[in-house]
Length: 141
Image (cartoon, rainbow, N blue to C red; front, side, top):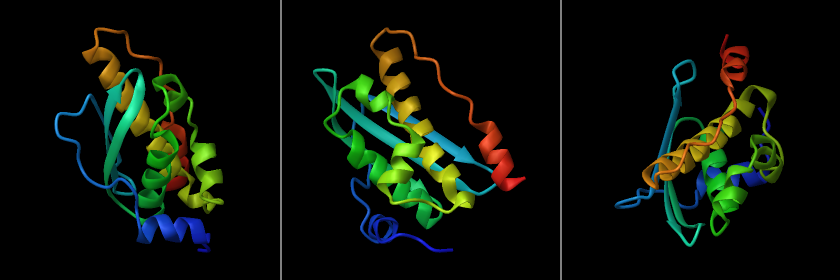
């Protein structure tokens, strides 16, 4: 598989790795078919993602997707962060092989779960999420 220099950079030098103590929101997703597990921690201040950390167990594309997504939403409002798409993550990485696109989907799903976790803790209703089961099934049979 051919990976862009950007993917390789985020894989070799991932940004925002780790955990946040007492996070405002946590989102964890995993795909048992490929073994990728992604956990995102957010700290929110004045409706903005003040800090974000992630821990990802998986392939290089999963790590790169987590790293890029974390960079893309840091400092953004909750609403802006919610609107980050897997396509935007993949585009920022200068593309992912089709068989690895699900990694960018995991990043989007983990961010959505972290934001909804934050919203619930604030006494707000969680926002409706997309169902991406089909992409994981399509890629991993």
